[in-house]
Length: 78
Image (cartoon, rainbow, N blue to C red; front, top):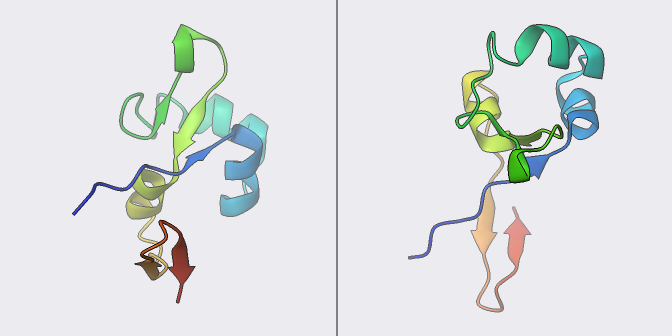
């Protein structure tokens, strides 16, 4: 059984999913509620943030969608 890669979201994509503004996420959630290394990362030590959707989803207690791995390597969203 292989470990699935985490879903990485930009600030804009995360804002659309949780319906908060990008500004609110960056000013109030990052480093207060969301922890670096757990909920987000700064690739190449840059300014851009990428968020780990599964960790944020678990924190928000959102239902996890059913994903069925396919033999071809794809995923069926069932």
